[in-house]
Image 1 (cartoon, rainbow, N blue to C red):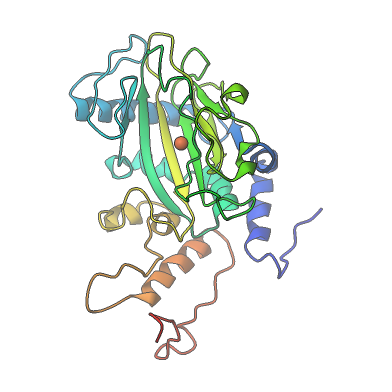
Image 2: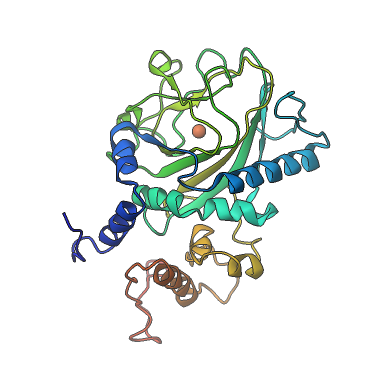
Length: 323
Ligand SMILES: [Fe+2]
């Protein structure tokens, strides 16, 4: 059927049309049904770009650990970041390291799927990488199964989710290479798994380098141990709805030059469309925050939210607190 400009779905209509144009209808059906979906290599980004992303990430890993990394031989460094593992380490706070990480987060296919789950005003929670090597134990018998959502269970959102996660695979993922473990359909439980729960139903996400995996934040997932030599590399991009705190706070550190060089949506993803957490006696900048949201909506070809400050710019009725 044709998706119209229906009044009852002012945001979903245009977004769904975009999803159809991108060929992602199958992926949102899989997200709804199973809690995860995989975009094949070349769909979300060309392989030449994926290779550049991989190489830049290896540079950062080298810079931060002091050790050159070898994807085939398995040479790697280690960091003291938390949580600390003997089979992998986590590179945090990657977004501002290089424009290519910003391009990854602003990827149109990725954002279409995250927006479908979390709304246009969702935030980037974190941009990280798990660098993983051979270790027969890995996360151990539980496979590290968990749901990403930080909201204590029962998760009060019905079949919706507070968060969504995603991963550009930068090496081939197989069972022996330590692939992601997913429990298909587990997002419907809308709670964390009990210890060991779901392990017998977990499957490996076997997909080649360049694939983009996207999953619902209620999904039970972890990873299998890597039994082969070499390294597993990934860029993980985690998002949350606008009402949750993000894991990484880029809002105070992102530069105007970075914002200018990227789609206007990046400012929304980094929280600049949220007037809360003002830090001076000047108080909140409601108008400024609203302008950030509207500019991003305009650039994305979406209908803009009505600006409550335009009609009566000096008579805001926004509730700062109870009075
Ligand atoms: Fe996770």
